[in-house]
Length: 177
Image (cartoon, rainbow, N blue to C red; front, side, top):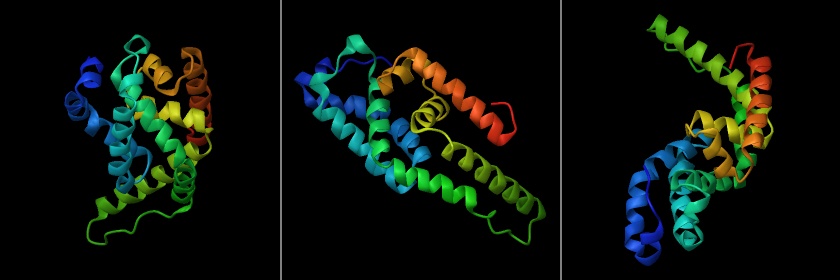
């Protein structure tokens, strides 16, 4: 969705259109990166920061969506230690408790638990920059250009971080990613 912030600068009430168009997407992205309890707060904070900085938005540098993802990613960065602790804890935790009455659900839960553990450990093993790129592509479904814009790095940096991350994830998970 292409939108201009120009009107939102002159008329802050028009900023609500941007909020309405992107809030759920940003909340989902934050919720995937951090606990859902934090997602609401950080998504709201993302839009508060964007609203306060709306006059510094430069449409020539890119679109609103990657700009918002960049703000959200920076806020997530403040919570990075908690995020890393979470991935490490998930990698150490055992599979979820089984539901004795349903054999297939038990198998599904154990399989999912092992997968979450392995994936969490693999994500914890990435550098913060690699993890940001992987999660912006996977969770945010951003293009390389949008990731570069969101993180304020060059397109080539995104490509190299993603390449390194894929190699690390492939090695850690034993699968093609």
